[in-house]
Length: 270
Image: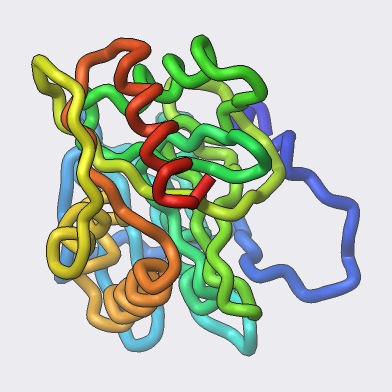
């Protein structure tokens, strides 16, 4: 747990039900060449994601050091085996757990979204954008300029389609460089995709524009496998029926905060 500091805020003593995801970190797995549907780099390490039958396989490898995981679906749950060999970095375990939980959560209509989420009046606004576009800056401005605001998560909250059809956002153990780990959830007011500009301007997106603004913020690696991608598309479809999406061209100033806040009030979402 020392290598996963955010997890301490989500500990539970409940043992009534079978867990959604169980991870065995002392499994013996065979490292062998795999045909990946997604590959990426993590520093000097190679990451490979693949399927074998109904199992998902994930590997992070650098020289002779590697982390292997295999996750299998069971009845209403998932079981994962993990093997760490050599000098594995803490970040590898952090990322592997996020991927494993991300796969297990999808059948529950739950998926992580790359965003910075700020709470106000018991609801959350999620700022979207590529790294460096100012998501954390905007939520920080909300905290500084609007009373009764609070940061929910600064990198990877989870959104969920509840059994009653409503959409909520949940805090998670993955909050990027900002240690913000809140085991709570709220309804979502809106998604706001950011673009830097020498002025402040906002407009609501609909149809294909709204889809295009939302999709890039979901886990890129999961879109490369058909079943996982279909689950994400289902969540996106249900989310867009209820939740507005805006595009904010903005400066990093209080004027951007006031523009979004007043627009959401005017559109009767706040």
